Amino acid sequence: MGYAEAQYGEVTVLVGAERGAYPFGNSLVVRGADATLVVDPSLSLVDAAPPADVVLVSHAHEDHVAGLGNYEVPVHIHEADIDALRSRELMVAGFGLPPDAAADADRKLRDHFHVQDRPDATGFTDGTVFDLGGRTVTVVHLPGHTSGHSGFLIEPDGFLFVADVDLTSFGPYYGDVGSSLADFEASMHRCREIDAHWYGTSHQKGVVEGAAEFRRRLDDFAGVIEKRDATLLALLHEPRTVEDVVEHRLVYRPHVEGAHVRPVERRTAVQHLDRLISRGLVAEIEQGLFRAA
Image 1 (cartoon, rainbow, N blue to C red):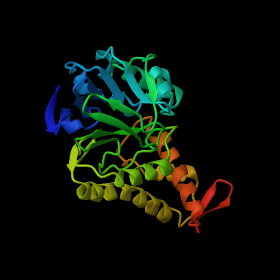
Image 2 (image 1 turned 135 degrees about the vertical axis):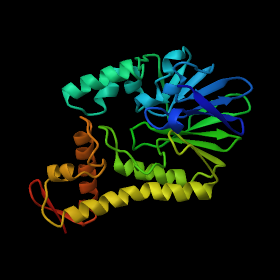
Image 3 (image 1 turned 180 degrees about the vertical axis):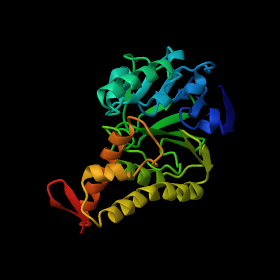
């Protein structure tokens, strides 16, 4: 499995298998004069984890913590995601799956991703600074994907790790129980406002150099939300229920199967309906029945 190393200033990106595409991911090693820090120990670090004095986790999803079992050092995550890191059961609960599917997901997290409870994890908040000696890592809270989803600004290198604001063509994911479309949009706006030299993502888009190029790609990524709105408005030329929208799908392509699909589609559909209703573009013409206004 393993990983490849890529250097950006004094930040080392551990590029996961398949360019970090799920179930793999990209991790970071940040070295200062006094301490070394690892961000998001991925599945690729299970067999070969570099040493570190502290670990930061961007959010409590399995692909970002698969290698965490190799670290008996302080582990930190945003306080809004801390319960899910302390308890695999709560991590799975956050997926909002039916009971049988939740049991399968728990087994997958245990057996494939090596996810273990980390009751020792402690919480950080937006703006928390980790001083490594001549190099700092500052928390940038970017909620939406999860409530506690966070990026990290590494100085003086000018490297902003944006985690699962990952710029992929799939688009923003806000389908968990604690996800928020509105928060995700606000987080993307915040990312746009941060000038950095490099922008690192968790998955296959890797590292983007330069603010202008990052913002261009971020606009394309955010545009997927508008495409979902447009798809929904076209569908609502005729009256539809939420279940009709779920059946049509806003997120996954028709060939994608799995117990997670309908719950994610339902939570996504409800958020888009609420958004379009608030803009006066959709009306609930009778209870549970919606049509474009």
